[in-house]
Image (cartoon, rainbow, N blue to C red):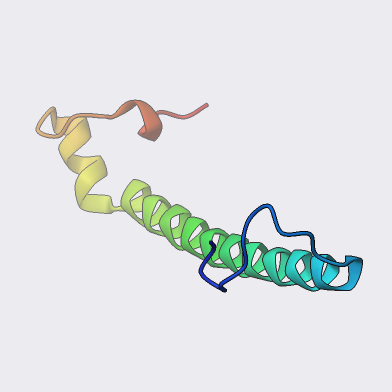
Length: 73
């Protein structure tokens, strides 16, 4: 039995299958949008860290390490 009370081996009609697939696609679309928003936010924060004047000064003085992802490509 699934959460909706249907057996997994129970045959379902095409309309029900289409509704389930549409619902699943919409759920996945929302999840992807949320993850893309989070990735944009994290990239922005990384850019801010890279641009930090104090961090750059510390790196030049040898007081702060330059991490692999901070090195220019």
